[in-house]
Length: 199
Image (cartoon, rainbow, N blue to C red; front, side):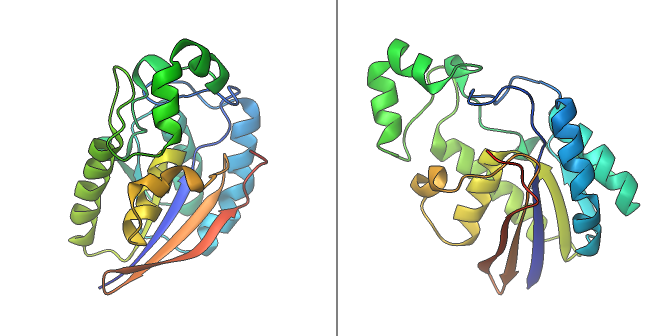
């Protein structure tokens, strides 16, 4: 089996430093410009199937890239961002002050950690793994996914055989392209944060 995953993080939302998961926000004008810049790079990688998170910021990204590449796209709920629960739209400093015990646990990178009122890292990785199993069974070999920083981190961990506890160690920039090639079940990170804006 050989698969290539072109992982595009949606462009900037104008909410830097805030935990944005289930909150459905659009891209900012700067984010739109980031994706416009990315069009040529994505087309040169020749994707044959485009799949997108259903969140507005990713759909906007998919619209720009699919029109340029000349392919339709499907909406895939499994690659929506992690649900940060009560931490949604907050900065880490706000979280640290209001949730000192939980934020301390989060910093320990324990895979069993669950965001208060939200999703656990384990459940998040499980749904990404379900998505990957479905993608593996598809005949196409080059996929473009317009998705979120957390999903890209999770897929990189999954495909490179890393624990989900390594998830925060990859800083995925807005409007960037990362590429993972999978040969016989083993993933190789072939490109990271290409074209990405400063985080």
